[in-house]
Amino acid sequence: MAEMKKSALGDWKARKAGEKSEEKAEKQYYKTHKVGYKRTAGDVIFDVLNYTFFITFTIICIFPFYYLFINTISNNELVSKGLINFIPRGLNINNYINLIKANEIGQAFLVTISRTLLGTVLMVAASAFVGYLVTKQQMWKRKFWYRFLVVTMYFNAGTIPWYLNMSMLGLTNNFMAYIIPGIVAPYNIILVKTYIESIPAELEESAFMDGASYWTIFRKIIWPLCTPILATIAIFGAVGHWNSFTDSLILMQDASNLFTLQHRLYLYLNTSSNIGALMNSGVSSSVGETLMQSALNAKVIKYTISMVSIIPILMVYPLMQRYFVKGIMLGAVKG
Image (cartoon, rainbow, N blue to C red):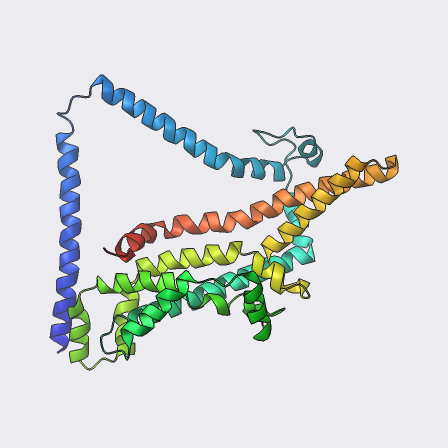
């Protein structure tokens, strides 16, 4: 039996190796025969326009992040006067140091990190296990439960019923309000289910013949082979948790220690806007000077928190990119 399992696994690996070999040979063929191809003026013009468009598009996408960053490491007075546009001036990292020292920001960052890690891990685990279960013909009422999950994607009662429901469940001013609602994600379950169906059935059959249980097969065969799609839904979940704002705003009104980083950024944005309105309304010189300094601090803090909120997500995606494309392609719903 063990030999049959190894044989099936070996055949699957050999097929994958063959596909990679064919892909490599195809690339080598085009590389070899490209030498004899004579480029026309139209090809050159197309390439110039193509590269120009994508370089311009890339600069447009990157510049807002670059602008935020150089304003957080430049002299604060120059920032307030709008003199920092393309290169930093008066370099300093005091804004980041002061942000770290601020207790409320540190607490918000800790809350956001905690909910992102815990929420993503539980969501990935639940999506993987449920996605595997609904592929099993032996599961009781399999089609009903799968359709029941899918149907929930099309209904949203609205904010007020959602708040009342969370309140009845005791999830207001409670950290678990960030975690529990996102554990079961129907869309992610569909992606995992579709991906698992692309895995050769012979692997499971040989494991069953060796006496393996569903749990053993899931843990030792399915989970390792599902790395691409699990990495994909992990990115979806992590970005969603990290950027989440409304649940903190609505559910944590009496628990400021549970505010997320995005919620704190929103509060600073409001503070900056309110100070600006007061200054425009006309005040005495001494009060106006104080407000000017407060507005300056609020503006710099706003930029700095924005960068702190963005950087972790920008760092995660490149690490997971090699899994992302494969996971999306193989996990896509086939027509």
